[in-house]
Structure formats: C-alpha cells, structure tokens
Length: 231
Image (cartoon, rainbow, N blue to C red; front, side, top):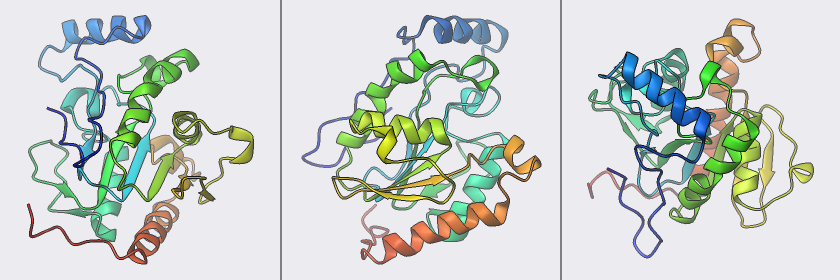
C-alpha cells in the first residue's frame, strides 16, 4: 500500500504489481516469480516518512534484496551500510534487521529507486530508466516537504535531473558534490553504497557517513520539525 501523501499535494503515481512499461524487466520478473514464488517480485514501493525533508534515490532493487523483501535496500549489503548510517545520523530509529517487519522507521527521510523493478545483472537499460522516470517525478511532486535529495550513483543523479526537467551538463555527478537546484532543493551526490564500491575502496563507510552527516547538519539548520509525537 502506498504511503499517504502530504495534505494538499497530489498522490504519487506508483507502478502496478504487473507493470508492463519495460518488457525486459516484466519478463525477468515473471521468470523470478516462477523460480521464487515466495519473494516480493514486483515494483518496489518507496519507504519512509510520508513528509520527508530528505529523499534518497537509489538505482534499482537488488535481486535478493528489495526484490525479495519488498522494501528498498533491505536484505543486501547496500542496505546494511545505508540503514546503519541512517540510524547513526538520526534519520532512522529502531533496529535494522534486514526484514520489512523489523520495525525500523525513517525520520524526515524517504527512500526510493530510479527504477522500481529488478533488472538482470542489476543493470537497467536507458529506456527502462526513462520509462520509470514518471514515478520518480510523481514522488517529487507528491512531497513538497523535500529539501534535499541524495543520489546514490550517477544513474540516480541523472534520473533526478530528468524528473525535474533539468540538463545534466549544468549539474555534473561527483561524490559528495552539492548542487543547488532552481526550485531551492539541494541535490547531493554519493557513490552507491554497493558491495562492489566498498570492496574496491571506491566508497568507504567513512566517506558515506560523511555525506549523510553533512545532510543531517544541513537539514538541521533548516529547523526540522519533530513529528515523533504526532504518529
């Protein structure tokens, strides 16, 4: 079930369970459903605060991660690093148990992906990223509370720009780069927190923590509302 939208904002358009926009991804989903009928095996919905100040945009669900569990970054190494860092920075509460029923909650943050369905070899094609862009654009329209966007990787960075109708040439991806967008939103870049990037040293936990800590400090300066007593 999609999260409730901010009052006065349009409801975010979400892909149906049998979304057919991308034939290759639909075929892969059907194959995976046949092999693992107990997995989620559908477009993975966004997760987190329905009124986020921070939107985190990843690449796509992992085959044995979000595609299996139904929650972004849940059940794989990238999630271990992401959620541990969010807990450390105060963007999350509870305990991450790599399971959607672990009780973990995000505070002032929400997580989505540029591509909602798992792609073969974790590599979506350009046409698939473009087709799924409508859902990212809808997520942004439905959350006027967003003050900052964290793009995990260049594909997520470019997907955010496309969703906002902005040209890539003016906002080049670089780890820890900060871009002020015309609507006042801040786009911050990080290398993706994948096992490949951490194993090769492209991204260390310390580098990732520094990006998240910087966002926490930046958003803190905007006087984040404490809605913990209103839920």
